[in-house]
Length: 440
Image (cartoon, rainbow, N blue to C red; front, side):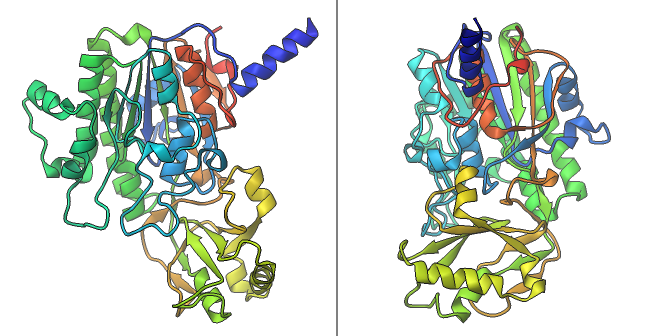
């Protein structure tokens, strides 16, 4: 009996076993830049989040991936895999052209929840979820902005990629409100996302519905972590979540639906910019015509690439120059060696990374000053080992326990919960199931 019990426990921990469907529908809401204090501290204006927390399961903190940026994080949320496995290492590929990000789902190297839902004969919907162009999603408005074309608007670029092709026309006819280019700018973007999501839930009732709200992240980048605009964005997003809850109830789905609210990263106010490629230029490793080494940016971190991956002499030279920097520069980062990158599931391509100190952000200069002060705004992309960069998690509704607090989990642990709720045959290579989240 003991051996059987241990085997079942192991399968539960790895998310490798699927049980009967505990919810007919799961709504996965990602708040870009969600922070746990929004729902744990009533000083924040988020009554819907706080009510959902009180009636379900919540985490005090959720660790992101490295780097803690949007596209790798959101891919981890729907794969249960870290970047080393799923292949979305940053927001945009190395050597990408201007405006080119990871748009296409075909770039993901591991199975997704979309795949598992389709395989199970269920349906899915998604609005503004990263890396979903061409995904096997039944009702999908993917993220796709203009590549190298600042004049092209989000609506005209994305409309040809929407599935089904008549989805936007259908929403316009049902709501009597026409989509305009301005519908996808500023706070109107999140309102538009909420409008599309409500229509899909009401009229198509997908088994898995994913919604990505962005206003919080935009406010954080522009104004910093604690600006008044953060509260304004929170009020907006919390009200939109309230609208989703009302939609679910009006559609007669409340008793059959689990609601999961999470995010991708926290936010840190910028104080200092660091241009590590200047060091490489100064030491003859990075030139205008040729290069031996260069750092790739990721907000609060930088990843070192060698032109020749086997160039041990250049790697040794970079490590030496980093070790010999002045103390006032060395305090702005720590070196993350390849062994540690492997341990946290980061991109396997770079030879090392720099995890910047809190408040320090990457600057792309290759000449001039290495360190400059920054007066405003916020950033993420940091190594996920401190409170301010953590995101959150709330689960409530069908199949979800009540009154449970999880001290700490990872964003890779969200997919196993969804798979379990929907009874999917879906293995998560890095995520583990916290069984206390689910009703027995």
